[in-house]
Length: 212
Image (cartoon, rainbow, N blue to C red; front, side, top):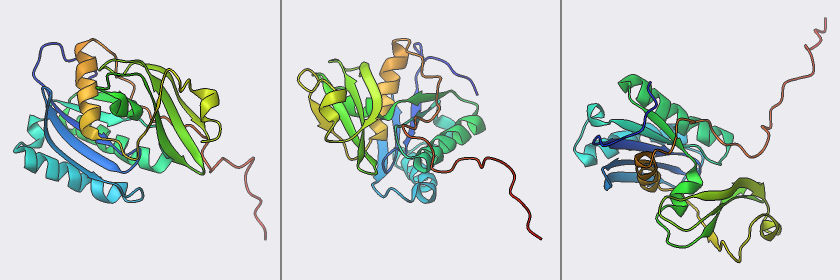
């Protein structure tokens, strides 16, 4: 599975993001050919394959026409992110095409003319926060980081980077952000998930005792 920029080649991107709900899109050279999203946050594994099939059908193409895959890296919950990234890896490996990882908050900030602070729900009464400078390529200046609504002003300069709340992440925006960034030579080879809190499950201190 190669990792490469786009240069001047024509691209048809399959983008997958499961940091909030599940969103899948296909973008070709700046044009959104198809996008399907489901807000449900507990059915990623059940729906992601179907959404890929629906997007390919609506775009009038086959898997063989996809040249690049983009995976949303989060921040987001462990289980949801794992499903989306695994699906992106499987598709890219199966087709032997480049896989690119993009921070999911970038999709919210992409294309905005003014600076902003992207805020998404991290559950457990916490929020995930990233701040972006003005400009269409979503230049991140801070974050992602984890905080609470009460503490938001202590981790983000809301005067210079006004708050922008997002309930969902658009895979189409994720693909467009990746496409624009790759043409500028930005490296998106890291597709590891971004978890902002430690996992609930931790290894035990030692082997369990066997009781007779």
